[in-house]
Image (tube, rainbow, N blue to C red):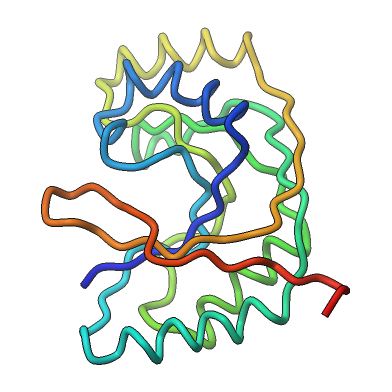
Length: 172
């Protein structure tokens, strides 16, 4: 099975992201707006129970973190993807690092850029046009994330929550 680890922002930020995703993201119906913490990875059915336990242990070492979307950016020229940039902070980076050194799956292909995708797979001209517009509109949203989610991919390509893990912080 294919799994991934994400943080879902509040409904307020999801609604803003979806206002663009409806039109500019072909994955709109496959997954809710999210910040990826660990890209998709494969786990055999016999390993799922151990993987969930392992993730629970990792999560115990982390605390809630601030998600601060500060601007619209792009991965161009690599891909024509637009996203809300999430300011990296020690909590996000540490969690991402733990999910790649003590957990299933491969190392990331690219340097980690915390973000919420709002548009992808556009033509070059559409990308340039939309990026120009959205840069002017901008974004400034801040909230606390106190849980992360283990997702799995269904046969139709959509993603759904397998389990949710609360970030305990200093209270445990």
